[in-house]
Structure formats: structure tokens, C-alpha cells
Length: 309
Image 1: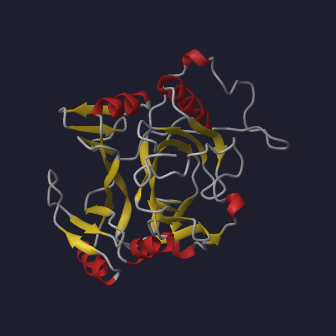
Image 2: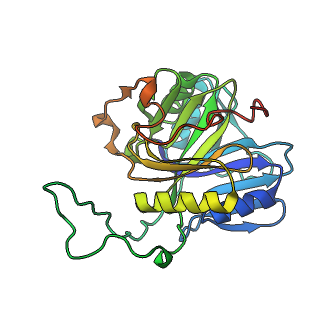
Image 3: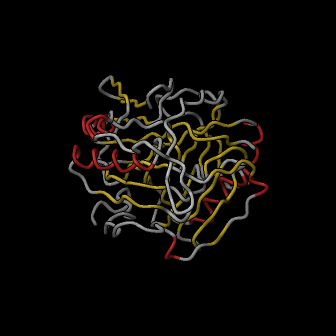
């Protein structure tokens, strides 16, 4: 099981200031030297997002993944149609760098798992014949809640010209598993042990690119509260509050300064053993959401391929 989980994603962007403002408003901790900005989830000692300044437009640089068995990944990469590459300028040669057949770069790193975050308050829902909360209110006055802080990077969704070819690469070279898909339009892959429903997902487009990253928060209330706050602070478009069929998670997406998306999520399906999971091929009506507001017109637009919409 080579890939164990996500570490970070790196984007080349025109303006660090725009990114710093947006991601700190989203609840991440930032540091910058004027050329590179790094962002961490509260309590973590590693980066979840890296932004590199100077690009004429936003572009995916690479995705970093925690993994083991790097020698096997290197051998399987060539067999799967990819290539092992040297580290890009400004990055260290630690671990293994590979490029898939469509040009997407992955950085595989052997490192221990992050310490488990402190458990938040349980999200208890009363229902017919199922009363689990008595003699107390579930909700405090709104002013008593602190700003929402993401707990961890959960997954990234990438654009690709061939969804199933991209799936074949991450399953055959990186040892991941296909969890679910909707024909050849969108597909989801996980680590084979103790994984969220998806770590890397793919959506069909004219070319490669970065669609969104998703950050876990404690519960659906924080998804809604965090999403509403980021929309108000950023003034940007959004999609949510809603719930996905694929993965089952509650979501709220907010558009970032470059046309891609930032997602808060809670209550994702969990796969402890991929060998016991059976992928489903969903219809198009369930490829986006089980319920939620109308999809923004440019939600699946790849601005790295076509700057207009």
C-alpha cells in the first residue's frame, strides 16, 4: 500500500498577497518570504499548501503524498507510463518525484503520520424514536463560537483529459484504489488502508489542472459556519451548503482568487480496508451532489486551460 495519505499541494500563482488573504480568512496559518507562501492547519507542523509567486496565471505545480515502498513506486511508475524525475527548482530531492502521462507531478515522501487531532464535541442529532440529546441545547449563541479552523487537508481534485487513464496511473504506480466513479467524467481514489473515501479525485477536462482542495472541520455546523464566514470575508462565489452522494460528506465550496475552489467538509465515508470495498459507478445525477443549491456555471471550468468562461 504505497500511498498512505495526502500531505500538501503546491500552486504557482500571480499574487501571494491574494492567496495569503484568502487562505488566512479560511482559517489556515501562513508564513511568507515574499516569494513563497506556506500554509498549515492549526496544530500541524507541516505545510498543507505552498504558493509560489511569479506565474502569469494559476498553475498546479505538484501534489505531495505520504507513502512507503518508494522503490516499488519508482519501478511501477515506468510500467504505468509515467517517469521518475528530479526535484523541481527550489525543492529538495527527498523522497521520490514522479510525473504521470498527462504531466501531473507527484512528490512521494516517507514520513510518520500526523498526531491525531483533539476530538471535537460530538455532533448529536435527535430524531424520531432516537433521542440522544436531552435537557440541553445543541447550539450556543452564534457569538460564542470561535472562527472555524481546518483540521487537515483531506483530498485534492485534479482536472485531467482522461479520467480513467489518470486513475490507472495512481492505482498501478502509486498503489491507490478506485473507490467510486461516474462513468468517465469523475473518479475518486483512496489509500488502501485507513483512508478517507478519497485522497485524489479526477474530473474530465481539456487538460490537466487543479480544481479544488478539501479541508476537514469538526462537523456539519462548522462546514456551514466556516463557509458562510469565508464567503462574507472574501466576497467570492460559492457552492453549498450541501451533501455529496459520492463520499457522503457535507460540503461548502468557496472560489479562490484564481477560479479554483476551497472546500470545507465533514462526515466523509471512511475505508479501513480497500480489499473490502466495492466501487460504484454512479449516474450523472449523483456525480456532484445528493442535495444542495444550484451549481455555479463555472464550477467545473479549468482556468489553467481556458482563462475565459
